[in-house]
Structure formats: structure tokens, C-alpha cells
Length: 228
View 1 (cartoon, one colour):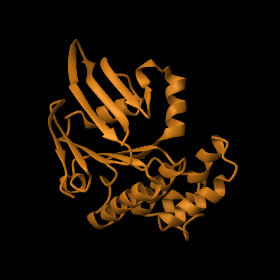
View 2 (tube, one colour):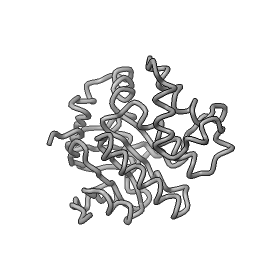
View 3 (spheres, one colour):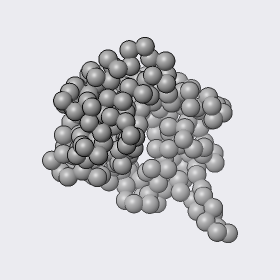
């Protein structure tokens, strides 16, 4: 199976006053197509920074990242944005829905902006898949946290991404609702063949993925094959 994400010798620092704060050191790993992959570690271990680098939202100080067969180090901002729009989906902890749009519009508008002719039909189908067929015309304020995250999941899969990055996707949800959203991510991963990369502090969620990368203090402490 082909690699969809390849990370080699990644380093990242940020300025903190007069000091340089090393956030990631010598990070190397790869993710296969259609795989489920978790990045875990305590707060401050560099998980979210690593996710942003892998998705081309930020640039490393050194090291290489190949995403969907493209060395993103060589791309400018606009080229990376095009790659993300075509190949990448995102789910965030805080949903990031537009409050003035309905559930249907939150999923269909990004598709319309990309020139999708049947955006509304695609959005409706996805919202039905995530169990929100009767909530199409509700605004985010009229939806529960779990329902908002399901809208966000539908939006993330709307462009049929090759890879989906989920940053603490159940972090703002209660345990039961969180489990439903988790199952949704794994079901869509199987159904649509999308590679799933999850950043989480939840070990139980991580153990549902095929591979687990553990970070501590910006360094890899282990790479595990999950028993699940």
C-alpha cells in the first residue's frame, strides 16, 4: 500500500521572548493510504503543531513532508491551499461552523466555492449519512455539541479527501456523544477510503486506530501497532 504522508527529520521552534522554544525534534514517521493513525501525548508535547505541519498549515524549520505524493516544502502558500482544498479534510475540537449558515449550507457552501455543481445534493447525502437528515435547515445554535460535530464531520468529508486530520475531535463532547462521533469517523474512513490521522490525548480513542505515535516533550517516544 502506498504512503500518503511521509515525514522525515522534522524540526520546529518558536520564539519566546529572547529564547527559542524547541517544539518538535527529529520527527520521522509515515502513514499508509486508508490507514487509521493516532498522534498522542500530554499537553505541550507538540501534537497540534505536528498536525499543522503535516497539513501544510505551517512550515517546519527543517525536515521534509510529503503529502499525497507532493513535497509540500516546495509549495508556496497558494499551492498548499490548493492541495488542501482538493486532497485534505479537517475536523477540529471547536467545530468551526459558520453560525449564520444552516447545517446544509455549512456543508454545501465550501463545495460551491470549489465549483461543485451538485453541492447541495452531496451535502444532503452526507448529512443523512451522519444521521442529520432531519436537521438540514437548523443553525448551529439550534444543534447540540454532538450534532454540530457531526455537521463538521460531514463538511470534512464533503470533498472526498484522500486524508483527514482530526484535532481532538471529541474533546468538547461527553463520553457517549464522543463515541458516536468516533464511530462515524471510522465508518466513513472505511466507506470512503479516506486516511484518518487523529490527534488526541484520549488513549482509548488512539487504541482504536491501527498505528499510534507517542510524543513527549516534542520527541517521539514510541511508534506502536495497535491491537485493535
